[in-house]
Amino acid sequence: MELNKFILLLISSSLLPFLAGATFEAPGIADALGPAMSSLSAATTRSPLPPPVVSPTIRSPFPSPVSSPSPPDSPAHSSSTLPLLSNNAALTKICDVTRYPAECLATIAPFLTGETNPISVLKIGIHALQKSFEEATAVATKIINDLSTTAAVKAPLDTCVESFDSGIAVLNDALTAISAHDIGRLSTKLSAALTYSDTCEEAFAEQPDLESPLQETGQHLDKLASINLAISASLQWS
Image (cartoon, rainbow, N blue to C red; front, side):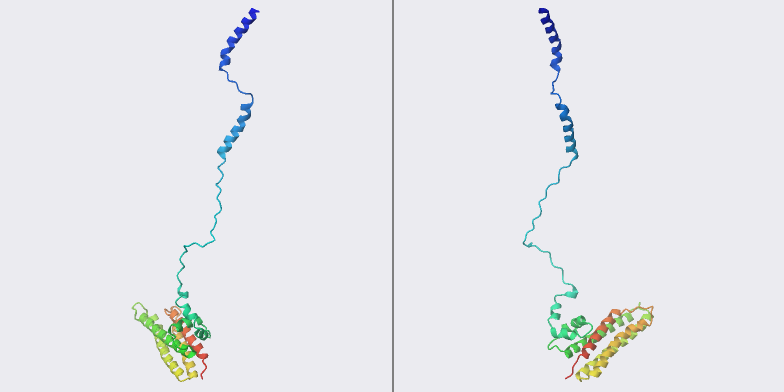
């Protein structure tokens, strides 16, 4: 009996140092949590944070006190001219008989005073065409006197100057016809003014290699002459 106790004591003393350094863990816990922790760590590394939630912008039902400046009026729709043109119903009616009512209004309205009737409008239109013939003559003469202008260009320009001067003269006759209430003579003179404005371009057309430097001027003269002729056709003499 004493021998058995001695052997048991001997075995216990020999195992005590080994058992003191051992670490006891609950079986299966590390094995069960290991893969789950690894997956959680990897998912945290790979998955980005969700985007922040942006609340929708709530627009005020009231207009902003600061507004952008309005664009300036274009030359074709200047506020200084449109009211003048649109408020004169009598002039609008007269110009509507022409092929170019807008040009008619723009030409006549700035110079119209007193009563508005076809005769007063026609007189202003004739004076405007005379002034345009004078300006065209000045432009053509300046080009002719330019030292860089070739002889081939000067020749048709000489024809232009002659035609423009004739146009001024025939319009003086048209004004006389209005005073005399001579509708036949008036129509003849205004028709002649229309042909004089075309003669300049025809002189250049005879030389295909030349381009007229007065194309826009000729178009303007044609429009004014056409306006005057159309207004004269609507006259009713008392």
